[in-house]
Image (cartoon, rainbow over all chains, first blue to last red; front, side, top):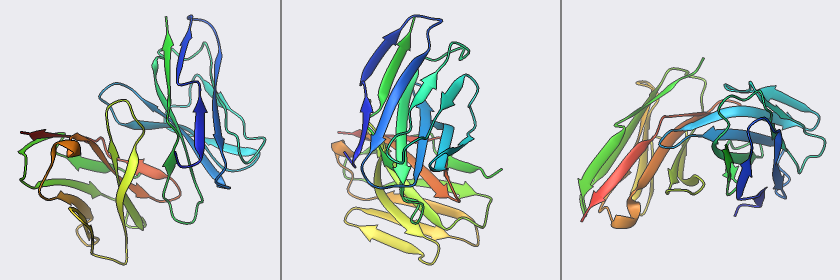
Length: 112
Length: 109
């Protein structure tokens, strides 16, 4: 699985609740990424982090927040401000030297 | 910003035939061009990549070509098989991956 884990695989929440998605890697990679994928669509970048304690907004950061307190972990919080949070969320990492990204198995979030 | 255009969005080929997917880009600073395969409900998986100092790379039935002058790169799959059915994404790397919109490849038996 490329040394990246995401949990849980499926997540169900009620509208108005914040929810945090977990992403952990043991590849010693500096850079980590969060993507959102809607059915039949491509990957859209939410947030990324090139180094611990630093992160940048991607193309669709509104309604999401992240932290990078440890090199191994990059949790994503989907807040109640995200208008349409139901989607497949993918976490990825790379060493920054080659560009090759390794993906976690993804979390499918359903908000009703 | 940088943009990657991927064509076609859907490609249907007869089993055993070849499939070609093409991506064009605008930023000449990019130096790494990967291709990912994503099966339904699963994570994208890297299948082949090419760097800017190489024009072509082959791995069994899969090949990628890069034309930096024309700013396009293509994925070639020969002797297609049913397990090749998936969505294929091109990307280019310049501090982060910029993704194409994807091509749904359908292999007809």
